[in-house]
Amino acid sequence: MIEVIKQGLRSSLQDEGRFGYRDQGVPLSGAMDHYAFHLGNHLLGNEKGTVVIEMMLQGPELYFTKSTYIAITGAPFEARLNGKAIPHLSRVFVPAGSNLKFKPPKYGVFGYIAVQGGIKMKPILNSLSYYPKVADDFLLSKGQKLEIKQHSKKGGSNAKVGSQLENSDKTIDVYPGPEFHLLSRENQKDLTVANFKIGLNSSRMGYEIKHTMQLQAKEIITSPVQPGTVQLTPSGNLICLMRDAQTTGGYARVFQLSENAINKISQKRNGEEIKFKICE
Amino acid sequence: MSYHAEIKPFGENAFLIEWSNEISDYNHTQVTATNKIIIEQFNDKIIETTPSYQSLAIYLKKNINTSLFIQKISELLNKACLSEKVYSREVHIPVCYDKEFGLDLERLSEIHNLSIKSIIAHHTKRIYPVYFIGFLPGFPYLEGLNPMISTPRKEKPRSIVRAGSVGIAGDQTGVYPLDSPGGWNIIGRSPISFFDIKKDSPSLLKARDQIKFFEISREEFDTIKREVENDSYQLKTFSKDD
Image 1 (spheres, helix red, strand yellow):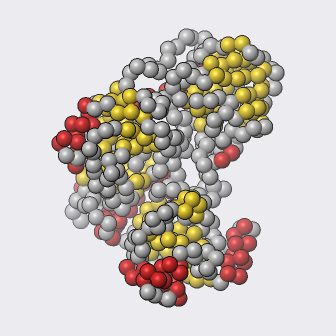
Image 2 (cartoon, rainbow over the protein chains, first blue to last red):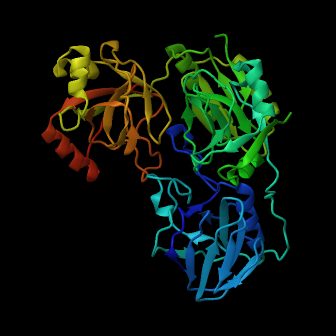
Image 3 (spheres, rainbow over the protein chains, first blue to last red):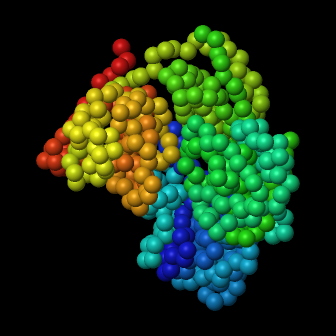
C-alpha cells in the first residue's frame, strides 16, 4: 500500500490516456510527458502503459507500507527516501515503512513516480488517468491509500539512462496545421522564425504561448483538435493544446506538434523560450 | 454520388477529411456516412474518429503508415455510395422551464419582446438533429434553433452552470452535461443525466440522434430526478431505423 501523506500540487494518476471516447467529447488525458512515462515503466519491467503518479512542480509525500521498486523520471525532482537522496532515472528499492519526499526540480515541470506492477484501481472508461469531473478518483488526496498491483514478471533494468530534458533546447518540431496556409505570408514566416515564451496561463489543458507580433486568424467552424494542436485566436493569442485538451474547437489550427514535441513542450515553464520548426 | 472532400494531414498519426466550409445538412450527412464506413472497414487500423460539422478526424494506431492509409481511404471514398439517411433515433428530453432553473428566461423575454410562454413554445416545437458531440464530455452540438429566439452569449459567463441546464447561445441550443462554467443563456433544466461514467457508452446523446424537448412542471422535475437516480426512468426514444 502507498499512503498519500501530502498530495503536492495536483499530483495525479496517469496512464497513456482515455482512448475511444473522443467522439463523445471525452478528452484523452494521460501523462503529459509520454517519454518520461514510458521510461519509468521500462526501468521497472512494467507492462507498457502501466499507470504512474504524475507530479507537477511540487511533489507529494508518500508512505510505503510494503516493499517495492520505484523509478523517478521526467523533471529532475530531488527525491528523498527516508531522508536520503535517491537517484533519478534508475530502479530504486523501497523497503516497507519508507517515506518518500520531493524537493521541486530546478527545471522542468512534470515528474513521474513509476511503481513496480503499477497501482490497482478500478478504471473509469478504460483508463486510470485523472480528468476533472469524469475521473476524479485519480487525483491524489491526503490520506488516500493506493494499492500496489502484484508484479507478474521478474525483471526491470539496472541500466543507466539519459534524460530527454535538455533545458537549453528550445526547438519545438511542428507540422503545418489545417489552417496554416490561410494565414498571411507574413504571419506564416513570423510563426516559424520568432522566439516565443511559455505564459503563466498554462495547465494540463493547454499552454499559453506568448509573443509580441501582430498575428491574426479568423475563427473556424468548430472542428476536431487534439493534444499538440496550436490554435491562433482572432485577437492573436496562441494556445498549444495539451493532454487534457477538449475534442473540438473553433480557433484556427496553425500547427500540430510532433509526438515528441508535445513531451518536450510539456516540460517548459512559464517564461521559458521556445521556437517552432516545421519538419518536412 | 460524387465526392467533394479534401484530405489533410493532422500531425503524425492523424488526418482530416473536410467538406465545404459551411454548416449544412449535406455536410453533416457526408461526415456521418463517411465516419460509419471508416469505422466499419478499418476498425483494426484506427484508434478512434471525431466527427464535427464538416470535418472528420481519423486517429490512426501508431504502427500504421499515414500516407498509405490516406491513399487507401481516398480510393474507397471515391467509390463509396453515401446514404442520405443518417438519423437513427428520436430522443425526447424533459425540461423544466421554471424560473428557478430558467435563469435567463425573463431577460430573453425582454430582449425578444416575446412572452416566456412563447419562448418555451418555440423551443419545444422543433426537432433538433445532433450534429456531433464535442467541446465537453457529452456536449451535443444541435442544429435548428428558431431564429426568433436566438440570443448572443452572455457577456459575463457564469462561474458555474449546473449539469442538465438547457441554454441558448447565438443560433444554437444545447444542454450542459456536467457542471461547468459557461456563457450560455439558461432557459431551463432537464432532470435526466446526459453523461454517466458508469455506462459503457457514457454520453446519452450520439451524433445520429434527433432530439425534441418537452415541458415538465417543477413537481415532475423532482419525480423524474428521483427515477433517474433509482435508474427507473424510461427515456422516450423512437427508433428511426426500419
